[in-house]
Length: 206
Ligand code: GDP
Ligand code: MG
Image (tube, rainbow, N blue to C red):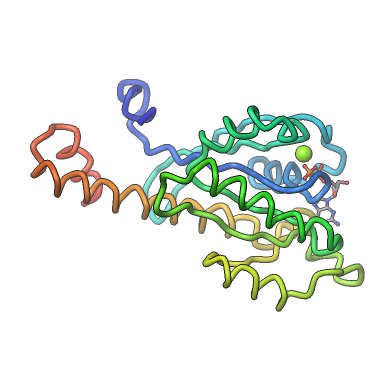
């Protein structure tokens, strides 16, 4: 894994998350609100960018890498590369736009296809723009039902008011971390914990 290559540089765990969803749902606004505590209303809609931040996850210093995708996902090869690089995904729609909710099914399928070799794919369904209740087109119960069917949590956020913004990133990181821990356990089990790296990883877990 990439994080093991740069031990001298940093021994912090790095969790890589990807923002996925239709244009205009608030992927950039959520990312920038999480990163810089500000609501950016007019972020360039075609610009994909990545961000890294040090955070404390349940008492542990970790780094989060956020890839904020944009229109380029229309090119299957670029999108697949993006998705392959991700460890966890925020599947975002806007509660004010029914089409963006419908579109999450296709995004989810693309993720499952690219990650087909993985048993678990950390994913959260995010209904953004919860501050625009009067313009709601997607009932919370409907979204929750879909998420349940897909076996993932559903959370409503507002990039404008910052409601639940930290929660979705931290909950996703917890899922990514849990997945890595169970994978490490499996590896150690199989190899009898002989390798130095596994031992070291196990120590971090303690
Ligand atoms: P992206 O294409 O998914 O990256 O969407 P953007 O982050 O660029 O947001 C699209 C538009 O929706 C912008 O005008 C944002 O200001 C607005 N927006 C994003 N999130 C929210 C939110 O939570 N509440 C409200 N009221 N507007 C939002
Ligand atoms: Mg954007």
